[in-house]
Length: 193
Image (tube, rainbow, N blue to C red; front, side, top):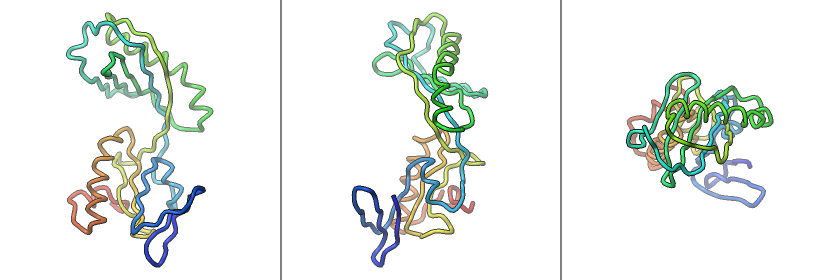
């Protein structure tokens, strides 16, 4: 994929065709960095698993979300179909083969930690996986145009473990920018902050 400036706006060239637009928003996670002059985020691998459906949540008050801020962190929540979703155990990213080879061991660690938190709940892992995410030095996402690039190419990246939150903020900021309206957090998330 390439992004090219034209006389009338921007053009995104893909292996399946061309897209013309007045603005382009690049929101492809850490893969967005390939369009920037230098890396702006450090890559990490994160691990997660989901259990088979659980019969009872004994000792889990209101099935609340649990976020342990210890390092490595742990987050745990339930699903509408009575499963337990757990994640964490991040490590620095090396390559996908290295990351994927660690899934079985990291899954065992994650389920052991949850069982220690909730010893009265019987749970068995159903599926485990890993993913990669980018995190900035200060923990805030980069949202907006890069100072060295075209002002019509906007980025939303470096969310760390806060994709849902930063994604919503990015939608607000980038909508305002494209509509040429102010946004109070625009400078907070800018590349040149």
